[in-house]
Image (cartoon, rainbow, N blue to C red):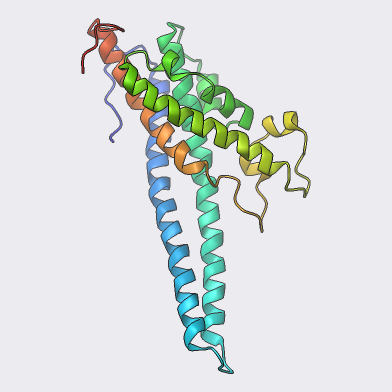
Length: 235
């Protein structure tokens, strides 16, 4: 899905469009890199397993030992890319939701300071708040069946983010256990080595959710200009 072309008469500032585009294209590159990192990790594990099979009972284990180290390197790379992808996907989700919500609500454009702040990784609370807006309130230019499908995805993602809080609270290692402190923090600040990445179960859903927002903004504006909001829309 390509980034939409916004016309000059769109009720968006140049900075809002620039921010949407910057996060969108960054997120696409990081999504592809994360998928490659996952494949690299899986391949490293398979190589190690194969090497262990043919060296069973042998004195020298240099080959499986080396591949074990290779797997650990791949793990660290996958985790680093995953955290980077989460950082930008979460920002894209909150920024895109904020702009779509303010356009649908007929509110003024975001200030430059607000746009700049929204390009940074949000707190888990900010992400939760953005994901708490029902699709019925955001995707008003879409047919009910479309909204219902995306509402299910939104709820699944919201539950996944809530699950991050539960997992983070069990980490120890200077990670706060109070819910308020966790919601006020950022996922990348709470992530700890030698534990499962906090973004597991959330990142792929978040990437899909954030990916659609620029096009939903564009779709709403097209339907608004066509006078097709909301009941006149046809598929």
